[in-house]
Each structure stands twice: as structure tokens, then as C-alpha cells.
Image 1 (cartoon, one colour):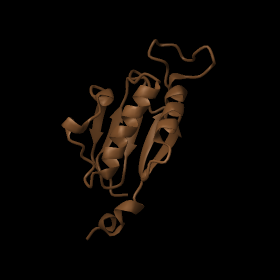
Image 2: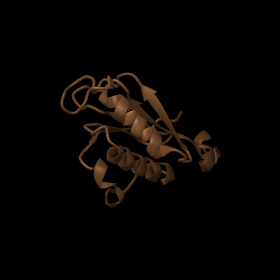
Image 3: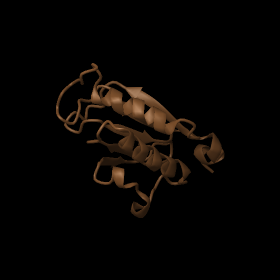
Length: 134
């Protein structure tokens, strides 16, 4: 039994990291209110993810994926991680991200079958990264 297997599934936590410095889809660094696209997406993700068990939403300044605005990174120890971008900073995008993240959290191996992907995440994945043990 690995250390990860010894941790009860309900005690594990996935992290959805949202880049707060990403530009808007139109290329502008900030909108009329002075917010970046990343800040808008982060606010929407926090609202959509409120009360989601097993998921921590984290702000990160620059994920170095600047050509893929509004970028997020989803990971949990022992599961593959996902980098995704090119999202609109909207409630619809946030809802799709949280829906995918919930399915990821509920999956013992972190694999969400394509048929279960929300439409709003299809075509947005940049990379699937190998699992890390801690």
C-alpha cells in the first residue's frame, strides 16, 4: 500500500489553480474595470466552486502559458494533472471547469472519460501531466 492509498479519499484535496494575470481573449491586459481576464475567471470559478468538497481553488500569478489566455491547472497527488486554457472569463467557463474538476475529484485515478467532459472544456486542454506522489 502506498502512502497515497492510506489516505482516505475524502481527506484528499485537488487543487484548481487559476492564473490571475492572464489577458482577456481579445488580447487586452485589463478590462474597463481594471481587471485581467484571469481575475475575472478566478472570481467566476470561486463563485461556481463554492462548497465543492475535495477541491481547493488557488490563485497563481502567471502560469507561463501566455499564448493560451485564462489558463488553469488541475492536480491532485497520485493523479495526472491537467493544464487547460483559452477560456472566456465567464460564468459558463467557470461552471464547465468546476464540473470537470468535480468529476476529476470523484475519479480514483483522476481520469474523466471524454463522454463525461462538459462541453465547455472540450478543446481547451493544453497538456496532461504525469501524476506526482506528493
